[in-house]
Image 1: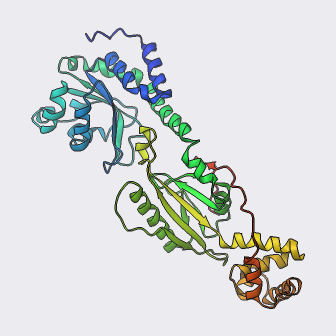
Image 2: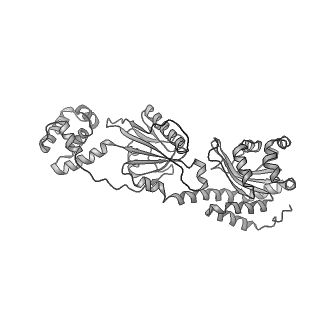
Image 3: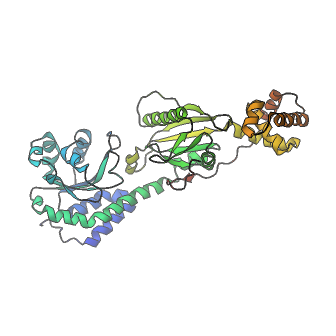
Length: 402
């Protein structure tokens, strides 16, 4: 191999790769070093999403104008279709997988390959990019002359492959760490009620302590683990409405025009008042290019438990008028709008016991009706509790459906 860089020190290349892992802006330079070490004319770190949104190229000695043209017009080319079937960690030699002679008579070859002296391609898929219909990894491009040493080039890329895989994974992790102090945490922190941040794939990204406790109770809303951690409702119709609202919000966050129902109620098997759920689309932030993997867009789900607020007000009433714990529970449910039979069912006690507690509440507070007691409770101000710090989720520590 006569590349002028064949004798480049292997350790230096690995060092360059890991420097790029720590500072993603160094990847283009690292790719240039890899290109020289392997014996190629250029290379890319590439991600092609199934629907085209969020696809990107990080170039190493490639023409920016042709990369733009490629993403706009030529992502579905014979090489890409062949590389879809290659397993992460394997090295694919493009011309052994396609009809290379036919490709050389195509518009793709004339517009993209020929101007950059590309005769063959090597591809190393990456697991985090190469899944669910997407395709992504490290692509290196060989000229006709370099293709005479394609086996040696593939062997050199194979030597680098474990380090490239780890370095790209580290880039993802460093990007997530860099984002941690920004909007997501501050937004979740500022909400006293249950709040959940959803990523571009519909999975839970962050949730606060109130949301963690609400999910643990599994009273109407629980954690679904069918593919990735996401919210679901016990009633199938509510679960479908919630999933639809999240999907629509993500579409809006990505700039699409679509009908949107951003508010819904979710009933609770316990008989307590339903949750009020607000779904808000959040446009992608100006962060790392690696956000393209999940679309960058986010959705905030805000869950209000009317009974919880009324319960805090009833606890103030308990301190003011000396109610017992049992009387306070009944007063809180009256304040949330439930009638006596519903309260009996929710608490698992008899209607007569509920009537007894209600009568004692009337005597201690000086009111004469359930409506008057509800008005009294609603008039009690409560200090908003300071929201606890958000809890990161990795799919292992979230509470399960009970």
